[in-house]
Length: 107
Length: 252
Image (cartoon, rainbow over all chains, first blue to last red; front, side):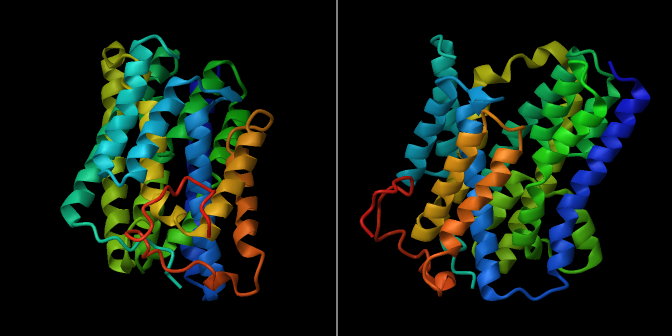
């Protein structure tokens, strides 16, 4: 396994690179005035990214299927959100459904 | 221009409560990160330093998994950076929520995580976005790191967070926050197209890349009629259209 020094350096590089990614948008967009259409598309882009994160984190684990328990929980949460249930209910329903399914033996 | 932002007025108290719930869930996941990392035989300082410096759960889990399995740390850094590259488009879209001035940008950028972006996105108007971004960002940073410290030293007491269903809580949180935007037809089509690309490529590509490729779905919102920017009406049809934003079959 890697040495402590290697891990320290790796953490520093990962932290610095991640921070650069985070800083790029706020700094660059303060220097230019974006046309309305570009602003709109940026917002759509974030919705698309978050939606893709929802789908991949709900359905997949590594390169494969996550098993039925997690998608079932997220689906129950989605149903609650669709019926305009409070945020608290959405999140707790999703976690509780998955937890109960696992308790019953589902993966 | 900002017509896409959520128009629903939520009282501040419910915003704080919602953020507190997400913080509690993330603290438990953070505790599991600390416990798992130490359990894999990695140094005690690693999970705590990494959580403060990197502050991105998915990349952290991926990194420690790779190095603990004997992987090259350079490859693990590259994998983590790929997972975190989505923060570039995040920053362009929510950059104004950080506020003006160098100090706010420098400190605020470090607080940019999926949940912060999603909470900011779900607010109406610049003042509320600003407040949601900072409240969620600082609370999550504190609770995530506190959880990691507890898990690192608490070790086995943390147990299996999957048994609590917390892996289903993260997508549910993001979905609940992004749902109002999905009621806009063009945005919904873009999200569906992007999600299809991400899911189809996940079996073949390294983590992080499928989500970035989902951006191809934006083309679904960008193409079409020349005046596409104005194509999505203001999302004030929440009361008038009590139907699923998940359904792509509505008859518009």
